[in-house]
Length: 158
Image (cartoon, rainbow, N blue to C red; front, side):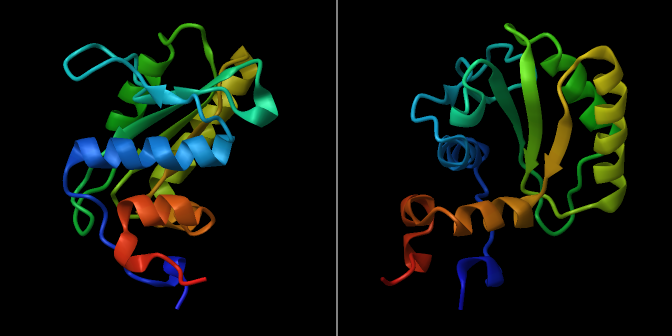
C-alpha cells in the first residue's frame, strides 16, 4: 500500500510538526537552506518556515504551521485571516504563503484562501493556500527521505 493511501496520524507535538513541514518544504522547494523563522517565543510574522525555491530563487516563500486535533480541529476563517495579516509583515515580502495544518481538509476554508488570493492579486501580494494533513501526506509520499525521517515504520521498501 502506498504511503498516501494509509491513514497516518500527524505529530502530536507542534515542534515536531514544524520540523516535518520544514523537511517537506525543503524538498518541495528544492532549497536545502530553507529554515525555521527565529526561535520559540519570538514574533515570527506569521511564518514558521521560509525559503527560496529553486523555481523562484529571487523570492521568499513562507509556511505557517498550525497543529490541530486531527479528528476535530479545523482552521477557522478568523484564524486564517489573522495569520495572513501577520505574514504581510514578513520582510522581505513573501511571494507565496501556505498555512499548513494537521487538521482535516475543509472546502470552506480553502474557498476563503482562494478569495484572499484574489484580493491579494489585485494588490500585488502573495497567494494564500491552506494545506491540510492529507495534502501534506501526499507531498511526503513524493519524498521518501521525509517519510524515513519522520515515519520510518512506513518507509517504502525499495
